[in-house]
Length: 202
Image (cartoon, rainbow, N blue to C red; front, side, top):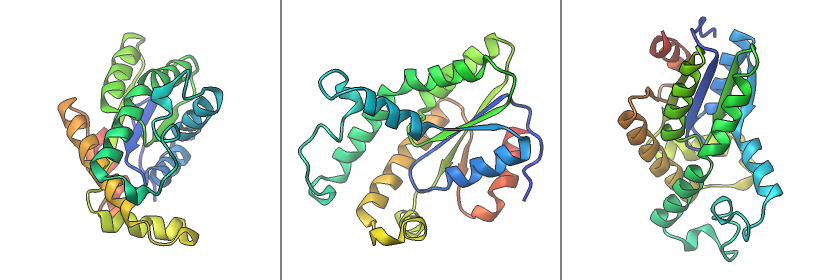
């Protein structure tokens, strides 16, 4: 399914875990012959290169005592996830600045893209005469996210608690994106998402 040609040099695709960002990014990148950056890889590299002592904001989860996720309430996990995402704003800007130094179009996708950083990235790109667009995917139904987890990670069994947190994070991202006047697309129905993305970016 083709997504059409979009007037952008960099496209940021944000959204919570399990909503289909990677699949959509792969489609768009293939259609545009664009380079793909999975921001989760950047996050993993930063975590490996730092420690909780030197960069506590990047180790919100690993620095806490190892315990079952179910022992933490959803609000607390959501709070940690938001704090981690906000701590990574400068990392996202670094990725964008690097991609703006080359002519090849790029798609950057990941859980930890915040609307605040995306809005700043768009301003910096515009100042350079480049075109950066952002879209946030939204799925507020934990059951759909849990089904996505079951499909892609069948060996892990039901992940209802993780899906509940992801849905809550998705609601926060969507609200923040709207506050920054960035497009928000409901993931459901997924089959029409590429066309709706093309319309949103037209």
